[in-house]
Length: 280
Length: 294
Image (tube, rainbow over the protein chains, first blue to last red):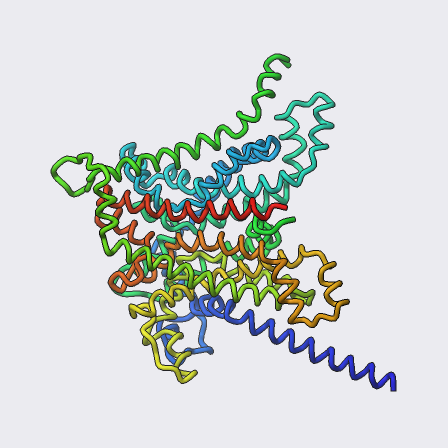
């Protein structure tokens, strides 16, 4: 009798779990479907992409990718996006890490809010003066202007993330170093930084992503030489005829690094996005 | 090592460390915003042949009498409340569903991140094809469900909801992940005593879980709202403010004034208005954080 009851309960648990898994899958489908559709479309010929009813079985082709790189100069956009993202992130790390450390350790709340405001303000408010000023000093369509503009997005992000991180690092480490005669800058460089790996990884990954995805600044500050990927893909549809194959292939190329980064640094990205919203 | 030099640097480190960052932000943000404010007091128009003159607050007076400005303001708020409203409800529900240990939870989290990290421009263009009335999947899906087809982005009434749907698709996972993290940080005592008192899951949800999550949800909502107010990429590449002005949010309106008509004077006053709107919401964030700091 007892065995029967136990078996009955186990059966109930099993179906309950199955139901739960099905629910989870149902919840995930709307979020995954568009991405799957983009990726499969990139390997279809134009006619297959726009076919109604949609073609689920098709012969894959790489002609879209070829066209995008050969006829539409995507290699250059890829290079530009990479250069700008890496440079903006690196420079922001160099000047942002010490700033975050200082704001955290010395409780410079006013400075913290000052930097934070930069993160929240709409980018377009700065584009008009930037455009005017950069034009005057002939910096339009240069890497310098683009990198500087991206830094205004990336730097506050890095500082915000690292302030939160440094807040969680106990002060004992620096204090024992100071007792041993180390000054603050060395304590920072030799002791704090090496153990700040996770925080720095979070900050770096998110910064790279934000810069990579940026559209508005390049739209205005680049004309030809320094066009980045988001502008590249946008140009495919701003003319009369739209080649959806090219658009989908371009989309896959743009999104691929983000997907790869997320695969490896998922934990850090989540940490970075939820920091400040969740206590503890 | 020269001892006196060392002491000098050390004593001032709290100013030296942040200095480059502060300088940079001053150069790239404070100074430009002041310049924008200055331009907003002139009638600068790149096409005008007569010189630029100082016109005081005329731009603002014109702006506040311009119906297109109020249209932009209304659309911005409509888009924001619609998108964030749905995101919050869906996000919380999703977080509650996902809040258990199950195999593949990390895979689920990974998949949830993808809409957020994907380049908005690319997503916007893909959704444009999706929304295409004749060759797009959206109307095909409606057909299967027996619902009449929609013009989606070409319809004045459907355009904002269509755009909001894209935003919802991209950012609901963010709310879900934030709430999930919040759920994970809740102490189990409240739940245990509720179970001991004989509460069922609905009661626990209403009287324990949701109230405890309130600070987290609130901050997530406000942070997401600030970003939603500033939405530019997807709107610009999907409709550029159209049809007509039916999706011209404040951000897009500012862009058209600045780099469409090059009426810098007028544009600057609109930019200051947008800046003020976002600033208002941001102060709300700071106030909320202080209020919930235990």
